[in-house]
Image (tube, rainbow, N blue to C red; front, side, top):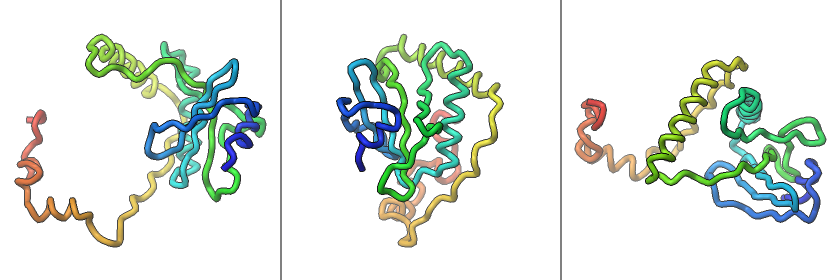
Amino acid sequence: MAIRDLLSAWSIDDGAAVQELTLGNNNRTYAVTTPTRRYILRIYQRSAALAWVRYEHTLLTRLAQWGLPFAIPVPIVAHTGTTLLPVPDTDVTLAALFHRLPGQPPDGAALAQSRRCGAALAELDRALGQLTIPSPPTPRPIRRSRAGPSVRTQSLRDAGAGAVGPWAAGAAPPGDR
């Protein structure tokens, strides 16, 4: 896959620095830096359903219009007029470009940051409850392995409820009592 060829669809020049990030499990993510801007290129892996990715882009775009007091990663429209591009030399892999948002992950030990995160999540929840957008796509069925349960799952079943706690046998888990 030629990342630089892909970036040209958004007029990102050949001189941009591109670095693969190790964030995430489902997609490949790249930091793209030019002399004046910073971006995130997201490569949706083969398992990404087009309808779900389009729904995500619609949701992000609408949330950005809501006027929330924090930044929303809005996908950038390419020269093609869409926010999603097929990745060359692949069957169904898609790419999207976003402006890189300032900031860093919160420090879980900092109570003030946790409070601000909670307040932001409350505002996000309120906005999501009031947005009018089409319903999300139908969930895809979960693919089950034909080989049967994993060794770990099978060993938990063999060990009985005591191996995973009394709530596996129907009692409430800790904190839900």
